[in-house]
Length: 395
Image (cartoon, rainbow, N blue to C red; front, side):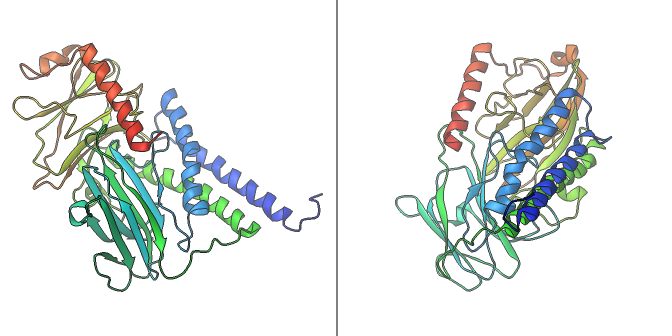
């Protein structure tokens, strides 16, 4: 029945288990706590499908610390866990008992950080073992850098690893999307020559099943987490205030998150005065912790792009039609989701205040002489976003 290969049964059963795990993951979209609108159901399933590639990268294609590659995690069509609209995330698997060199062109992202983390009980690993900030990394006259990851001391930039070290992650947050340049670097194993292990039926079936399980568990994890904020809508709180759990946190600041709920005839006003910071940003997404399509929608702002009021206040407005305000957050057809503000390298972390109003009363609730934007300026604003995305992801 299965031909002449003794492993046909194993491979068929592995593929069926992979498919069944993904089928089971699909049920998460229909849980009682999930939004029931067509767009939320559709995007939930699309999120699962898009994350299959991410699961395969982590659990099958780039999971061997003996021959690692720096690969990007998220992009405009592959998202999860509140991806920062400004970000380019890259990383590689490592073994804390081995030594690695990471070298290349630093680039010019406004925020730059390297973290080494241990394995843990979340889909993204556990706590941070060590980190390096961009300001701590010296480059040569051509903009090139080198970092050594190893359990034993090295001269120059060195991150000490230990048994249990599992992954290295690079975070680049771009303020000026069109002009800041991404890093161009690679990772090299120093202890020995990297050797790609021969793929076997056992390894591929195990990797497929782990990949599908990661898709299900990661989606389930973030669905569980967002419920905390959904229970307290329009209140900004940090991750640490709700969940005492080690995870690969962004160094240098603590994101503040709120769950928003805005009907077609409503608007949400969010007000805060940004602190002096190395970098700050606002991201905006749906119930599935997925940012809106930042290539074509105005769904974020940051320390470079935001238009502040004369008082220094940042005025954000969520409404289903364009109100002609510079810092509009476009719900993109959704009526609920999340907002995150990030103050990085700031002396204090001001908490934004939310006010939900009737859409027809929006302008009565705004400050006098608030800033506005014309339709022509909006078009230019959106075109600049797409150019910035092309610059960052080189697509």
